[in-house]
Length: 319
Image 1 (cartoon, rainbow, N blue to C red):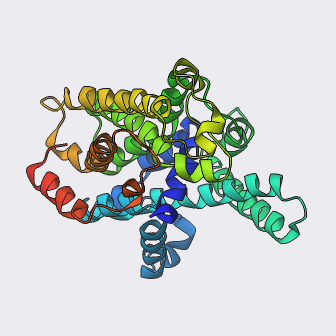
Image 2 (cartoon, one colour):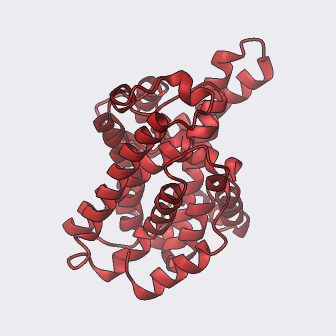
């Protein structure tokens, strides 16, 4: 389960689909009809290969299982684009992870080479997209690389929310465009769902990060409850650590409630893009049952009923 959450955990901290790269993808989605998204005109035959679609599917299934299950419930026309987006997010996560890794392991030449090759590959890919409409600004991939490969905790909860808006919400906006939807109420709901997802992912990744002596939880909340980074690094289950988790989880719950307050105004066709709320709600309920002990082993177990719950919510067309 930890392996499947790693890409998601890294993506929140590293801003892999941030507002800059999102504008690039958004432009591509607007120019091409749903069944043409992510194809290049000069290589239609290669792009149509089932092997490409299968590669994306398997990559997302192994690295972002929650996103994989949610994508399966999209329409056939939107599913391929959604899986391509999530696969790209995973690829960037792996590249960014290697870049962070080589900063710590200076003597690993092969890892450094692989990391740099991945970064160069995706930088070139985004430059190719920009050539369709060259912008008057630096390449977006360089912007997120300079800005987001910042190995520190969030200063406050607002910073985490802003980061989540620029990463997780951006992916949901793209899913809405894959579904052919442009609706202000759906966008508002997507904004809150993305913020909730970023907050939850930060919590879910805490045991993983702590085991590597990294803590990204908002510093203001940690200071409020007198919880140090060392408390998290050693996996403390004391009340002050639980209080930090409670405050952060509560904010995620607030965003979910705000998103659902738009449900009567959001088109039913948008609900497939919001199925991730089932995953978020599931984690928040489980961490509550664990008395907000983020290190409780039960939180690392996958809910065997999750796929059924996603299908049921999809069938009801609710989020």
